[in-house]
Image (cartoon, rainbow, N blue to C red; front, side, top):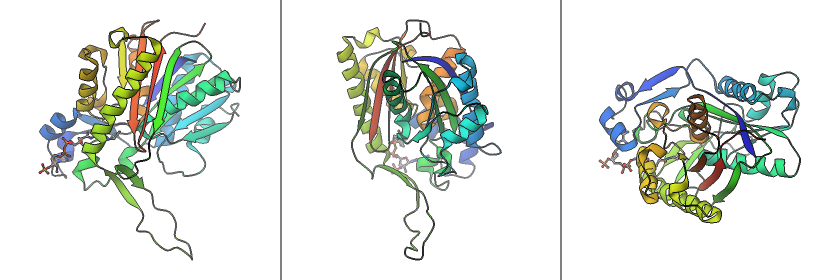
Length: 321
Ligand code: UT7
């Protein structure tokens, strides 16, 4: 597969660390030094469906593909207001009346973009589709308990999208999962029934930060090193490492584990916080818009998240032949 179009959309509301310190027992100093985050964008008067559609439209427009030539829409999303219908069908309705392809949502947590790439590659390889729209749209701010400083300061909302088609741009990929449900979870409330009136199961996001930190660094380094070995490459051969934007200290640990310079690790975490699976496609769209991704550049993508899941993809950047 090859990426031929990109797009992104973020909420209008910019929330600084100082604004959070106005109602939480936290500080700009703590958040900046422990995470690298200075501001995040949070949904307020806007909604996730509209962001997802805006990112999708940009990706389709920049790909040059007609929206009725999109053969599949995959949306990566952890949770949103609509449990059903899927967000991907809502996106389909927003990109054009002519579009009537199959749609599906997947929950690969923060690694959802890499999981979507893995599935898209399989659909392209088996001729089930020629053009696939992948949209990662996330609103993690809605899972947090906003009285808890441990989680609410970390996240931001946003959407990133790509259009992919057949090509030789995906050199290697790896996705993993190892059941670990207690380190990072969010339990959404469901309706009560005459037979089950329990509501105590619902719980805002719970995260054991230090465990997640350790698993993230170990998992990412294992994935990246596996793809480098499989491809006969060294860390120095990679032009850009596009890592899930969760914490600057996680990115630094992975970078040091690979012995690489800071310039190879572009970040938007400072401005957007952790936007879950949307973080890597938003970053790709920004780098594309800034003209920083040259044809032939080698990109290593790597992400991790609740599950515990990880995923990495090695891409050679460039338009499909
Ligand atoms: O997309 C995947 C999702 N998650 C992640 O990738 C997160 C991975 N983990 C992390 O990024 C880090 O573990 C955190 C940023 C969540 C926390 O950083 P840490 O250096 O591991 O801090 P800690 O949890 O060990 O807490 C240190 C102290 C504690 O106080 P005491 O016990 O030392 O008195 C916390 O209560 O910092 C306190 N603390 C805060 N203080 C001010 C925790 N959150 C805050 C806060 N403001 N927001």
